[in-house]
View 1 (tube, rainbow, N blue to C red):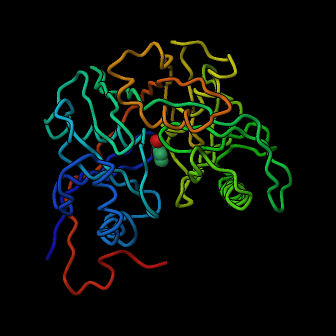
View 2: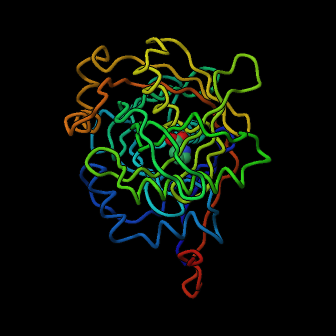
Amino acid sequence: MKTILIIDSHTGGEPTRLVVAGGPDLGSGPLSERLKRLREHHDDWRAGVVTEPRGSDVIVGALLCEPHDSSCSAGVIFFNNVGYLGMCGHGTIGLVASLAYMGRIEPGRHRIETPVGIVEATLNEDRSVSVRNVAAHRYRRALTVDVPGYGAVTGDVAWGGNWFFLVSEHGCTLEPAHIGELTTFTHAIREALEAQGVTGAGGALIDHIELFAQSPRAGIDSRNFVLCPGNAYDRSPCGTGTSAKLACLAADGKLAQGETWRQESIIGSVFEGRYVLLDDAGASETDDQSHAVRAIDAGSGDTRAIVPIITGRAHIMAEGKLCFEQDDPFASGIPV
Ligand code: PYC
């Protein structure tokens, strides 16, 4: 029987399943290369860990890896029910909380290697975690797509560690009671973007859709609804989605460097976000921001890049061992 050791946490309601032992041998080298090996040779393993019957559509998996860069405390590859994520903000907060729970790290700053660059996570004394994300930028402003069944929808395309289409004018009610229709609507937007050839830099698929509305709560700047690639919605305010939002706010001159933005999720959990301009972030960080810089070189219409800092809190939920009997017909999940 094969076994995999896991720690489950949630960040603002969004679960992260950290695999601490029992992952496939991906060899050495940069995490982008190891991600390629995971995708090409061990995709069944991914599905077994996060999809039913051992997981669900909501769980984000995080494979703990030896970092390639020795200045990093850990390396991580994020995955979900349908594939892989470049970066994951809530997942990084969950990873850091789990490493602290395991006694592997103390409060303070820790560099973490991901397939899209190095991020820096600070475990704060109050157990919240602040993630200094890879550089974010708005790639296209006010693009309109024709969404069958809904009509014209206008939004921005931005990179926050994943590609997002961000929509503020939509006429929807962002309340938990409407999650079904919000999922159907955002799914239709994603299909329309793909069908109409709207992409991120270099033809990248825009696989996250984010709607915004005002929050009814005092002190909260905005509420969001985020559709993730496998059609689950993010229970957290989405770290990479909040990063993409900060990039758009910065590009529009609506949020100054260092100012705090409180982003609430559809279920009411909150991340605090702020940013520094990439140019001001220092030489060591710019080395890590190659993806964003490449994206900008590829011809952005809107080139102001920022380094987002996202703060949230994760809670440990479970520690255990996934078991895979040799004759289990669903060891690689339930095919859909
Ligand atoms: O927090 O960045 C995030 C995230 C991406 C997908 C789900 N959560």
